[in-house]
Length: 494
Image 1 (cartoon, rainbow, N blue to C red):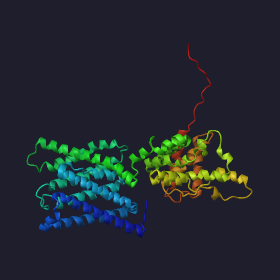
Image 2 (cartoon, one colour):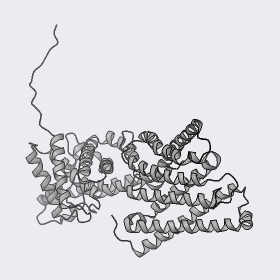
Image 3 (tube, rainbow, N blue to C red):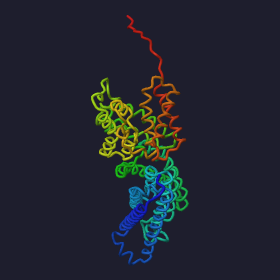
Image 4 (cartoon, helix red, strand yellow):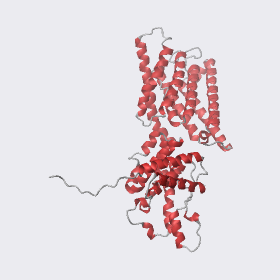
């Protein structure tokens, strides 16, 4: 997590925020044209009160923008360092605003997809950040409705605007229903699972509509209750449908790693995974086991288990370039017997760089490329280094037989580094008792600590201990001992 912003990053993030706030205000004012058949400027000239209202909204939105910037500056500087996240946030707000305005104007104010913003924020931001931006959007919409799109005391529209009760209803729906949606959506792992949220969100949406809008109506009939039920259901269903439609677009535009996309990238039909399974079956099987181990370790230390699992699937994808040069894909003959240790080292260590390049070429998440190039750090390729030492008379520079790095910069990359080495080493054990596996994994972790492989990530000793324990449990489960089957030939009874 980034703890400090450079002066350049602060300046660029402020500039991006200013541009995005201006874009949001431009969209808000352009929507007003629909209320006046394109004669907004003439109307403002004749109605000074409306000009004051516009100024109030502009100032309010700017203040909310400043508050939002301050929130992220103190709570999540990483958000500001990556300017695409700021653009993503305001693009979501603009889309949500346009959807609410158009549906409110041409259908019904109770039918607006108010929860679309909440669901998008829940999936693309941290939970706390999602709750904050949802609240900001709720106030933004409320201020706009009261001052520029209302038929009440503050507004000057004769008809077609949003009443005070409707404004308060939308504010509470966004706040309460949005919080529920943000909390629930974190547990959803499939796109179709999002459909079930529609029915849960209907409960607070309907209750808020009934409690606030029924007392304000002169005729409280069952027909009105059914009408509110219908519009509330429409609101929730439309919010979820828009969320499912726009989420893949945001995933592609901003390289977002949602649980939905991560599962798609690790499915059997994923392009590179399919190639790996066919061209390098040994590497594919190794990657599956490493992915399971990495997922378990990530859960154990509180990291993103879906991300760890997906990154592990692609950590050795660079072996697709020369699959037959790696032990797990060889049958009997070792092709390195014909090569010098130096050439073998070049081929072996290039798989990290080749993997990163292949991932970027296929427009996969950059995080996968980082893990692919970091999962061996700057470790020496000991087998060929030892082979070269035997063939030489003097000492050799170990750096010439090592991976170029960099070392892991995230906890997930560190997990995959340890899981990758542990899985490969555990295969060579004759006796895979828990004691021997624990000694093996502990020695691998200690070796990497001694060689400063974890200096660039904030992993702790406690977390390394938990990872070691988790890997021991996982490896002894994968490579457990089996009974020896008797050599008995059975024939079919006649």
